[in-house]
Image 1: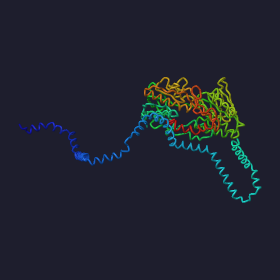
Image 2: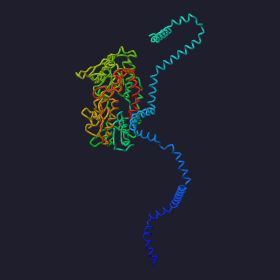
Image 3: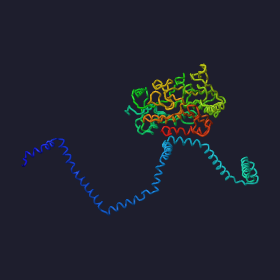
Length: 193
Length: 399
């Protein structure tokens, strides 16, 4: 027996009841608004799947792809030696970890100093003070040499035997001569024995 | 502003001990990031061991001071307040502004209190008119001023009959002063006196032997068991009590370097955490409180029977941290502190005896040579190396 319009309407009653709800109506409107975007994304996905399928079915393309990858990764394929080295490294890891745990705070400490300008300035100042006397002696010595050079350049008087005799009597020359004499004596001692 | 009132660990005190413990805790357990609070109202932090050399005119006091904010480790909450009271049964403390803070674990690192007021006339006269002390950033310059301008007479150096921070400091400045007086040519018309509340120059024989030779060489007059009780700044007289006979001895001075009496901070003395002596009552080996199992103490505020020094804190901190973490993680294997402490005893410009010893007053030395001998290398260590180790090693939880 054919359904009447009233029968159809009564079948649709639950649906109509649902559609009469405001929330459902709003959701339907939102879904319809998003439909073009969904369709576009589905089309893109369909195209990508088609491309992958086509590539997988194309033997030449697959050989090219996999061959290229093999070339790139050839150098990374572990050999027997590298696997042995890896095992040894793993075996020694506890020892290396122990060493690292000793070194790590020292490295952190040195890094901390390098980043602390006040500490660097303090150390520099201290080093400067410490080397002050040595630097002063070097500067004085150099100064003396420079002044002596200038005086020598300005002294045009002839050097006679008397000049040399006077020079020999200088305490500094005497001391130097004694030193050289002692040095030579001591140096020749093992030879005479 | 931090609105947290509940912390996993609260550390009372942001001095050497507090910051070192905080840094070490974070290094050992990143899970504690943001869960540890340091409570300290001070905005400046000082490397106090160098004040001996400031008072001796060797170092500028500015290098001993840094902003506290630059030293608080990242991940630690700094609450810039003073602690008012402890409620260990409720696991909470109250700050000076009335805030209640709760903790699961508490570390008390409050330092030592300087009691200037306990010597009559001292508080009013410190830093003026020949009265000086290395025990305050504000007054340490006055020590150098007095030494530099000393033109002869009586130079007095005191040591109280209370525990002090850095037990060697009272005599170190005296040896430097003697050196300077000889350099400036006033030593022959000066008398140097050491008035000490202790019974001898040093508690460890090996180093005491060297120091007694130094005293003899420098012609210093020592007066043991004599405690400073009054300063009459007008008359330039100091009054000492003989601790054996209770007699009072009045001595004139032209300059006087005072080491003031010290004690546990009042907020600790008056708390349930204190032993009868007023110090935080902790186990000498594990640093755990004798009564409250989730409380630890470290440094100068505790009743640990060793000299109160920064070097001691450097050895106490890793023990405390490991024991606290064991407790937190319910593990066994508590570590023990052996009482190690160290006193770099400056005996002149360019010489130092590096004393290191333990609870039994037995030497516990770091170097493979006789540290009882006065050495220039050890002086350099104190002057150049230790400050760097402090700022960049100890306070970062690294060394």
